[in-house]
Length: 129
Image (tube, rainbow, N blue to C red; front, top):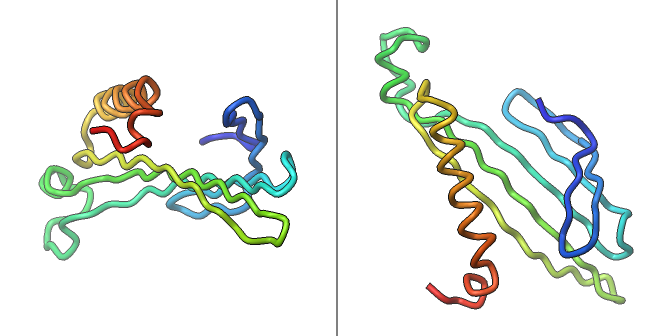
């Protein structure tokens, strides 16, 4: 379980995101006040996809092999101009692996993508591919 508040740095500005919502499948963290005219929201959602209508109990190995687990981490930064018009910049990561698979393997893939994006962020958002 992540603790609130979460610390996040965008550029050279540090934000403190407080948990504003939580359910069984995720949480929403928000900072509305660190920088005037800027709102930072981080949403973390966990879901299962795949086989749901099966006579096999949902905790069985057969279901776990066919069902996928997804985690979506969504960062949304909204900047408001002097007239209150919002400009939204959003970045998200989607991690998808077989239910019951090794968590460290999924984490390693997520970290590899994070490292690639960090090393190439300017080129990537400049439409290089």
